[in-house]
Length: 420
Image 1 (cartoon, rainbow, N blue to C red):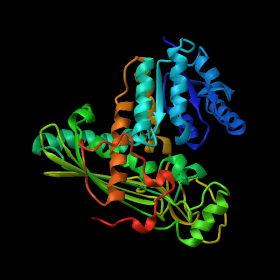
Image 2: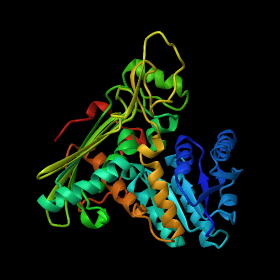
Image 3: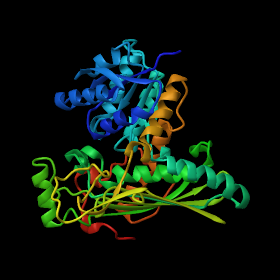
Image 4: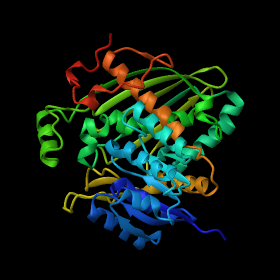
């Protein structure tokens, strides 16, 4: 029997924790090392690995030490966006120089803060000869995967290709200060969450087993962004108090609402459309992901807050705030949805199972950095459209050097939504 894949994790924040918890449902992998800048969270993540039985990792703050560890065969990068490119490039330099031997590197979404950064990630991996995976969990969500398979087999095969995908992701705001900082994160909710909705749309509009980049050709992007909640004085003050010295939405706001419509032509030359909506200003039980796919004689709908389990708590219990029921939980009373396994529901387990299998077989994952590059281009087209008020035509628009105003700290919400 072959040995499990030796996994190194770079970063020790909430998404790294989600990956570790998901590995309980993944075979043939063992976390052997964790690297990060925060010794406390790195140690806690390693302890979680041991508690869950998914590895007994060493810990370090030295990225080169992690890469050179002979037990490490693949690395998951979960670092904040503003250090992601340099992290990939440093790892790939270790491989190219012969100081490290890595089969694959999987990179969390988005691939870069700009299309230029995303290209640097892809180029670094290609130059080093390292397989690259794009950690986009939603396309591996089991409900979405199964419904997608059935609809294409029973609907599209009999009545024609689907023509409209609608994907939305909404919650009340991120967990860490850097997410709210347009310069470190690369934008606001469009960069943070629309990347999910765009890739889920591409997935739904593509036949199972086919390459979305081969089946779908982007034609145009029309988008708008807005600051609906968090720039209001009371909420801006709340963010400043929550993240002192990190976030100032009075001076440097980021969008908390985004909408994008993307036109593609599919492999049969037909026009198909993706509609995406994302928000950090959603008030509800917690994170809500919704997906729809429409075709000539069929439709699909998935909503992650329509859970099989719910609980009700009256006004009398006054417990502490937490996220033990659902991610981004907003309440501890009333009728609340319960996710029995969030890592499974949101697709984290499925994506890690796929990445592990691909890297052990030394093949490129189906969700590769090439897909992440396409998503980055579509996100930048959306920002450009939102800034100019015009539809961005593709592939004729060169976005390699484009940096959104939100990412430079110069965006004015008062100008948002003005179509020319």
